[in-house]
Image (cartoon, helix red, strand yellow):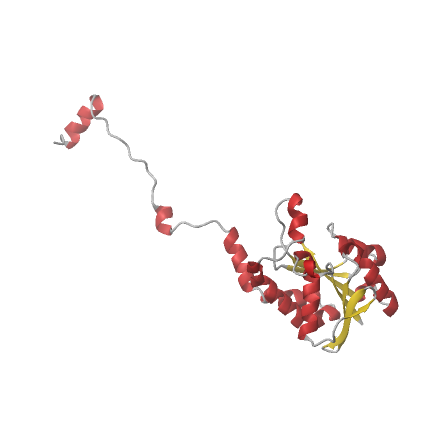
Length: 236
């Protein structure tokens, strides 16, 4: 059994929040692989199924984010799972939108859901970090994570969730490198658009090569004017 945990907050008002990208990912896995309807268990919504021969339990804690560990610990204890048997999908401020990193252990980066799970299981579970981008200032973090994805963000969000669901078996198999490669290949246009936004606007080769010599006003009187008149003739 491999436990795939999606982090989020329960309730319709939170459903489309950036902080709930873990719930969205788990829902897409369940949909694509025809898992049975979620049911209440372990203070969570759970569903079990098999993907490419791997037995998987999907779990969405219903304890609110800062107590996610209560739910995950109940499931881990019941099935006698080691931390390596648990993968947690969560939002990551320190990654650009659509970027993904998969890592075992590490810090929680101030994420309350990860901090809660660590308090029960230690640090050695797998973290699937889905980038949502940083709002630019720490005072805006709270409103950023607890607000809905913008419509334009679907350009990277939908392909990311689709690719993650298609390759869910790699999560259970612990093949982090293959999973990140598959997800990166699913988002080529997102990577290009991010690069285009950050790149300075280039001038044409003609404009770059054109000298920017300022025009100089010639003297109309005095010794220099007299000398120029002798050289080039007087203009009428």
